[in-house]
Image (tube, rainbow, N blue to C red; front, side, top):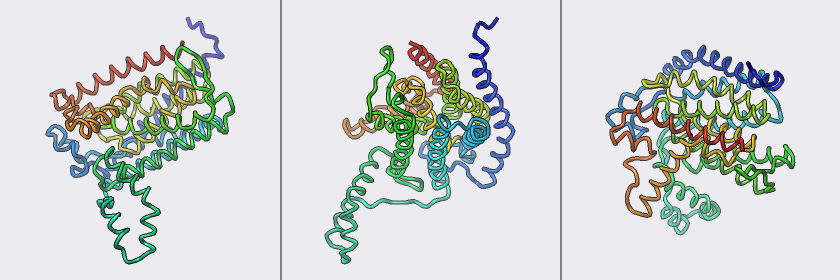
Length: 377
C-alpha cells in the first residue's frame, strides 16, 4: 500500500509517464534515423579515429554516427510540446540544442570536411616581422592573444584535424555555460545564487556562482563526450544518471525538471537498446555534448552542482584520466595509462568491451546512489 499522499505522488507518476512516452517515441523513429544516417553516409571512418588501429575495434568502421539525435530530438520535441515551462525548461533545452549543434557540426566536418591546420607561433612571429602588407602585420599583432590561445589548446586536445578544433569548442561551450549562468543569476532571483554544500546547507556566494556554473557546464559536456568511446558506455551511464536525477528532482519538488529528466531517461532506454554491442549507431558529439550540457544544467537547477562528480562519476573519471595522461606526457615524460581515456586502458589490458562497459555501469550506479544519499542529508 502506497503511503505517500496522492498529490505528492502525482508528479512522479507524470515523470514516469513521460519517460515511457519518450521511450516509445524514440523506438518508433530509431529505425528511420539509422536508415537516414546510412543513406547520407554519416558513418564512422577509420582515418578520423586513432583507436581504430586496435584489432577489436576495426568492426566499428561503417557504423552510423550521430545516433545521439535520437535522444536530442525526442527530448526537445516532447518538452516543447508538453513541458515548456519558461522558468525551468526553456534554457536547459536551449543550451542542450546549442551544444548538440556544435557537436553535430563537429561530427559532419570529421566525416566530410577537409583537414584544417593552424599556423605555428613561430610562423606567426615571422610573418609579423617580414610581411609586406602593414595591415596584415597589424592584424597578426592584434589577434596574437587569440593565436596563443589556439596553440595552447593543442596541448590539451588531439591533433587538429577536420572537425571543430579544441579552441572553437571551448569558446562555444563557454557561451553555453554563460547562457546558463546568466539565466540562473539574473532571471531566477536571489535565492538561486545559493550553492548547496553537502552535509552543511546553503551558502549564498553571489556572483561567484557565474564562473562556477560555466566551469561545470563545460567540464561535464566534455566529460560525457570523452566517455563516448565504447558501445553502450555513455548511453547506459547517462540512463542511470538521468533516472536518479528524475527521482531526486521529484523528492526536492522540482517537478518540471523531474519530468525533463524522466523524458531524457526514457529516450536513453531506446538509444542504449540500439547502441549495445554490436551497435546499430553511435552517439557522436551531437549527443554527448548536448546531453552532457543538459546533465550539468539539471543538477545545477536543483542545487546539487557540487554532487556532479557523483552523478557523472564515470564521465568525470574518463576526463580526469585524459588530463592525467597529458600531465604525465608533458611533466613526467611518460604515459600514466596505456591509452586514455581510461576505458581504452582496460581494453588494452585484455578486458572485453562488454566486460569494461558493464563494470563501468556498476561502479557508476554505486556512485550515483552515493550521490543521492548525500543529497538527501
